[in-house]
Length: 230
Ligand code: NAP
Image (cartoon, rainbow, N blue to C red):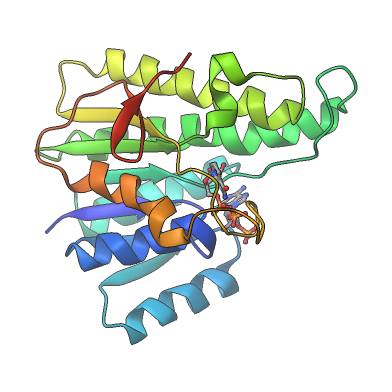
């Protein structure tokens, strides 16, 4: 049995990743910071007969991350896939005038969150024969696209891509592969209704990386193809 955890999965791309992984016969642990929203999302997937469990997780809450890790250890003894999906976008303010409090909040969620969650779950990922960490990033974190707007968000996603490279190198001799994905511009609360892509399309490359037999590590993907971090 393959076990996957998805963060920020009560709506948007994370929710659809849960559905797609469950369709691929994963047992999915759908996590959300708001328990009521997370349970409702899980019930929707139960109605579609998928094997999904809910566990509360705010990625900024260290003790909650420890509880999740204990839960997985006791119930499953290992973890095969971690999707670091939870994020906030913050305001459009530029790096010259964005409030430090806002930048800090975005960094806590989008950068320190995945760092904490990945660190905590590495011991369980090491118990898998073929584990993957998938960091949901964005083209807005690509080096050559770094204009000054959305300061906190861009900084956090450049940081997330650095985590992909550093964890991949650190875990090079393990069975854990670590990669970033850009889902494209997707119709969610974050992407807005004018976005070009459906959630199904946005989730596709994430599911593909979770299920492909042989994948590289330390890379960045969009539309199932490698793209440059720079
Ligand atoms: P979304 O619809 O805004 O959903 C974001 C999810 O993250 C929600 O479930 C939200 O929970 C959760 N979240 C926020 N802070 C959290 C925290 N501290 N702990 C746990 N969960 C938290 O966004 P989306 O469009 O699905 O985005 C998913 C991922 O794709 C993000 O990493 C985003 O940066 C990336 N992305 C999206 C687009 C796009 O066009 N949509 C483009 C490029 C990259 P609540 O419901 O409780 O707020």
